[in-house]
Length: 531
Image (tube, rainbow, N blue to C red):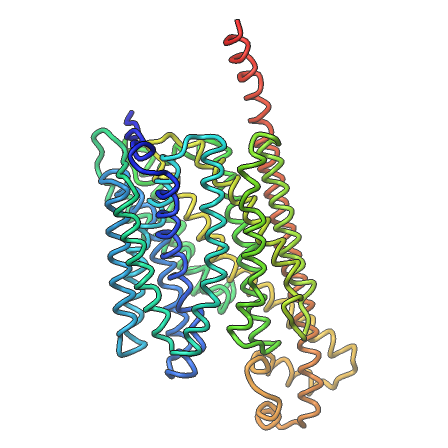
């Protein structure tokens, strides 16, 4: 069996600088992933781009990252994680420059596609470098906690800056920021990160890489379509089913070759398998709450984009509160209990994002939910990531990191699709029920249901003209639409919060069983040492 190259980086380079270099690089791709989504209104209203083109351009980056994560991790394990990460940083930085100077919004699509492929080289190698350079225990837990927390803090702050640049200068300005960020990441990684890779003779599994890329792409493509088309649409079911078949073939193929890109043996650990499932649910809860709150503020409460980003800054505050906790409490309480506590805090925050939403939104509206959601994510994701990666041998650090990141991407993609599907279903039924109880005529109810989506984007006089009703009727229906929207948001976030808690409980019992088995072994070791 091959073993990981000794972590010479711990003596050759200050590991703190190594950690921060990886954090800067990882947040470069993470922030870049959300740029098009944040500037989408400008591209549609200011540049005349179609909403379908902008939506695909926004999604294509994440789809390509997820598709090539496993391949990027394998390349890092074989040819050197620093080397592969540098290639990814250079490539993504070049794509940011091209997006900055592109003459047409249409050309953003192929640029973002290529950027996503390069980003897939950064994501797994950055976390793998952190894992192999910090010894298992408090040091690694603290490092991973800082790595996770940085995503939340930097992501929240960057969203305010990007929205501000978009509004003040134009949609190209955020890409200039990303280009500068890429140059900074390149300099830091070159200077402070030492090379590491798995030793021994290893070959790249190109067949497995292709199966994983196409299969994961189709699965996430189908999931991304679900929010707009519904989960029963052929545009969702066909790519989803084909993708699942290809992943099934990947699992079968990977279990029969010596050095697969998809390491099936990692899933022999129940902690690894259920930890990934918890990662999916944590990301669903966090991303659904943040996405739906932002959508509500801009579509219903009519909060300006920059102000909406400011109102979500408590998420960063929650992460900052969580930042020192894993390092301080590691070992004092069982990891199983800490994971459950973090998940419960996240679930409560997610539910409150729905329950406390109101037509008049201020900074205080999402203060407590944001702090809880960020803190819960910071705690739960840190201990989950540490527990999952600790089950993998050093030579599989890249594969474990990539698989962990795939589960996070899957959760983030599911968050938008699942919460949108639930919202779409609930809001129509609740709206109809409210109008019926209010004694509205069948004609007004039909008009209201037909114009529900338009009501979120058009003013009352436009709707009155379009549907040949009075402005007063439109105002009454809009008020009831807001009421239905808020009730649907509360129900949606409640379902997601409960589902997250159920999975967290399952992981709690699995981890607690493992911890109980480890206690006698630790006691025997201590006794033998004493004797």
